[in-house]
Length: 375
Ligand SMILES: Cc1ncc(COP(=O)(O)O)c(C=O)c1O
Image 1 (spheres, rainbow, N blue to C red):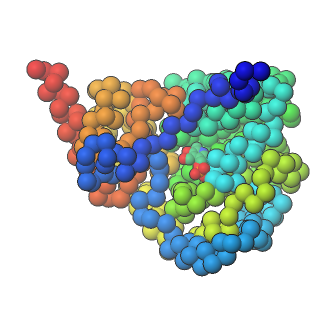
Image 2 (spheres, rainbow, N blue to C red):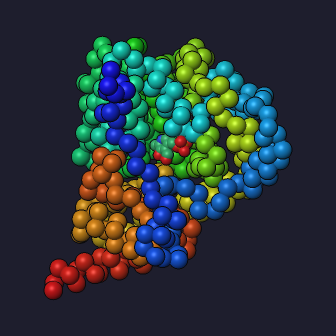
Image 3 (tube, rainbow, N blue to C red):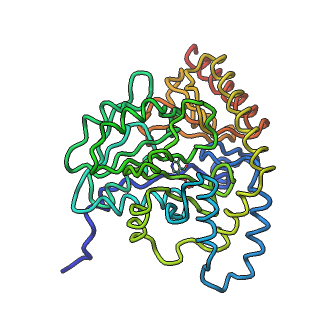
């Protein structure tokens, strides 16, 4: 053999391109002030209680992780629902790792998964990684997930349906009525994944909370994250919730000591930090309302979001040019082509000052494109 044997599945995998970092853009553009509104992070730092817990745990950095995994699972379960317990929870190295564990557990010897065309690209990437085929459902004309078309695509070899709610990038939720109708039609061999990473930002009372299906013992796994409302994106902690037998089975894909105690201790402490959570949520919900109303005033087609980001589509100049214009003015946002919406741009809700600076820069970019069009 003259060369190593490469995994053909991996060669097909589109590499996930993360939002640019502040440092990268400072270097590239020669700017001192750069605001990142591209990865839906917390603009108010991390939970102070979480930081203190992590600092304390550093003293144990020489030990392999201990019992905190179990403690955190108990704590998470108790907060979710009195009928759930530690064996319903599997922790992951971020919600992304929980999604990886689920996909690895159910996609093997081929198989397909179904997802919206406009959604979080990791579902597609993970499916391909494990040798499955991703099937895409176009969005409805009102930008909602087309659940009827999803049911129509299910066949005997469908392993997983991914439902992202609120959906990244639209910010739209799946309602209880929609989810109930969908669940009634899903065959028993299919795992339904509710990716609820943005759950905490939902204010719509119609929201379908998947815990009820899990308690009924349906083949449902829900994914949540400590990256958003706990402000712990860099700690990499998330989890899945599911019926005990499914959660147990998925554990076969878990690596030993896959999350360090420093991260686990910070996640656990963040759950007790009500003051941080309230402050963060207030800023995010006010910022979301501010961005949506100003974008609409600017005559941009803005989707009404239930997450900590806002997406607008068909701007008057090409989305990549708009993203680039903002980048030159020190504001990082993301074009949504990798998320299946090439006509759209997503901006994360920032601090009031960040949001204001984004709007000012956006106005400048739009004005200069109009001037260029006239000259
Ligand atoms: C829809 C969705 N799911 C999952 C994640 C994973 O988050 P993390 O791995 O940081 O927990 C993200 C991150 O932004 C996301 O947008």
